Length: 123
Image 1 (cartoon, rainbow, N blue to C red):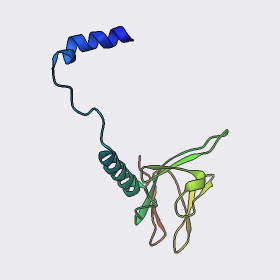
Image 2 (cartoon, one colour):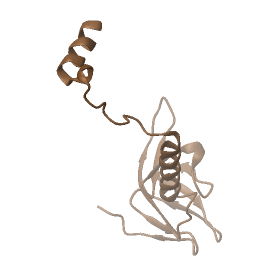
Image 3 (cartoon, one colour):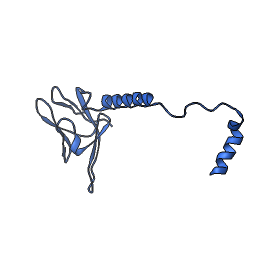
Image 4 (tube, rainbow, N blue to C red):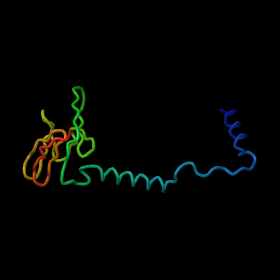
């Protein structure tokens, strides 16, 4: 390891008064700003954090040996963490709207405010 470091120093000229490269990593303030921006972006994509007037069931994976995963508005959810008091049904996912409980199949969209399901399934 020392030989590699010595070779690196010789080839880059660091040992001969050349300038050292600038900062390789972010400062603590820059890391905090990046973390805050990532958190804000995640919350804006999450259906629970940024309420949407419609929910689209993008996909559903049922596992026999583990927890199933549901994609709603492009965000993956475990069955225990579904928005709108969702429950897994044999033909889709049951979601609670203010007016009634509706069952949504993959590709369908439910209007949360009115409790109506767009019956056109996307190909």
